[in-house]
Amino acid sequence: MGTLPTSNILSASNTNPAPPLYIPPSSTTVDLEYADLATIDLSKASTHEGQIKLAAAVCQAMKAQGFFYVINHGHTPEQTRDIFSIANLTFDGVDPEEKLSYTDKSDEVYDGYKPKKTWLISDGVHDQIEHYNINRNLYKRAHPQALRPYLHTIEDFAKHNHFNILHPILKLLALGMELPEDTLVKQHNFSLPGHTSVRFMKYYPRSVEEESKTKSVWLKGHTDIGSITILWSQPVSGLQILSPDGKWRWVRHVENALIVNAGDALEFLCGGFYPSTRHRVVQPPADQRNIPRLGVFYFSMPDDDVKLFPHGDSPVLQKEGMTLFSNAENVPDMETWRKARTASYGRAALRPGKENGVEEEIINGVVVKHYN
Image (cartoon, rainbow, N blue to C red):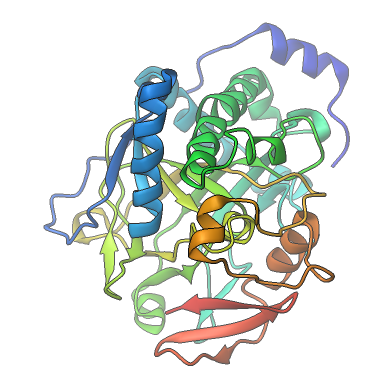
């Protein structure tokens, strides 16, 4: 993939057209067992008093479930509608031949398209997931013709996620560890080398035979690679989290809300205080079974050169103790961890773990678990 021509950069910067409208399906009416997740009103972080109260609530939510909802995040329903419309255009408005020109050929699948059937799920069945990954620096690479009129909208979306959502959440998490509020923010710069990115993702329905072989699991239980994942809530059910009692529970759709969870990098940096969250995607309920599931994400990662070693100066860690996932001499930086995780996912041979239904692999000396 080459560099985006200057003319396209200029045209993207000077226009902000409305994309072809995507009409989301209705939410499921099936009675599902939902996880009881906290709701964080991010607008309350604008005052010091509100920030202190929210820090306690976010700390509790991260430790109890590892997931929480965010509301009042500064993005209007109309803006959210537009970004989902652009996401849908990424898959339905680009022909297969052009997609090949923008498909990441490396093992990382972290720029451009990831085609279906990249990852082995189970019993010879591969995924039916297509995604398009856009680095926060949009102009590192060229993009399909259909997306070029909307690059300014995508760029605004990336900046909004980074500065108006990610950074405030990182400040709350740092305060929860009694660290200076900018401790984690300093490790998540917008302009430095890294792979924090916008991702558009589409899950396609599978055959009855494939559902049977995989026990209806579309994406195995896993933890995310980075620090904070921001998922823009959408109505097709499928996301489940592994609750503290060991039971998988569904995540309910909340209109124009965010679903936030912790990843490996945050767990490493915080010495296990905020554990990375185990989650999976399964076949939607019966009334949504034949509907593609469209997703919009902001996957945040620390800067590439950040060593994933705990902030041991935290008074909370000094009091409660911390987990070291690697010794100081061999601790990986974010770039090393990211490349190792993405290269092995869905390709590496897994061994049975000590827990029932868990498979394991070793990456950079760390045991990575996959939950079935």
